[in-house]
Image (spheres, rainbow, N blue to C red):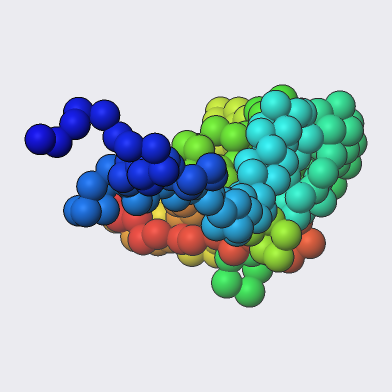
Amino acid sequence: MQSDHETPGQSSQIAEPKAGSEPSTGASGEGSRKRPRARVISLGRFAIVGLACLPLLLFALLFARFVSGQRALTGISIGGVDVGGASEGELRHSLAERAAELAQQPVTLQLGDKRARVRLDELGVVWAVEDSTRRALGVARDAGFASGAIRYLSASWRKEHLPASLRVDRPRFEAAISRVSPSLIDDPPAPGEIRVQQGVARALPPRAGRAISVNEARKAVEDAIAHGRVQAPVVLPAVSVTP
């Protein structure tokens, strides 16, 4: 009969776990679970994008500073006066000086091979200083954002010449043209008339001729004065007139 008690000296069949060893959790390897790998975020790509956008950011800041300021765009002139980069006060002063000079300066009107000289104040054509100042300051500001930005960017290599704004006294202009017409037209139209010579009445028929087109003459003078072209003769057109 076997005894329920071990005999002295008999070795125990129960193995004690060794110190430092990990307990096994099964033959399937569930104990060797993979630890999650830390995600490494590279800043190199963001740095490249930031450097690429830096010029655009600087341009936007410069353009915003220009729009909020009160200086004319670089590279523009108005009426032949260089006003690029001028402040509003400098602009107004320069244009007012030029307008005063032009008012007393004679302009040459030409029709064919005949010429006549007349002052601009006699023609009633003067520079509108305030309107011209606003026109110069409005370049790259009054347009939309995209158009304004393009004009601002191209100002570094492109020159832009603007016409000055004008005020025209039309009755005065027409009167001046009527005064100079005889010196420019040698074959004006003549209406029919009755002449009495030595007690005899004789009917003279109307005669066709040429006359200065006042509207076309005004356009030609305005174009020359607005662009500051006062040294060269202003060529006037003539039209045939039949009474």
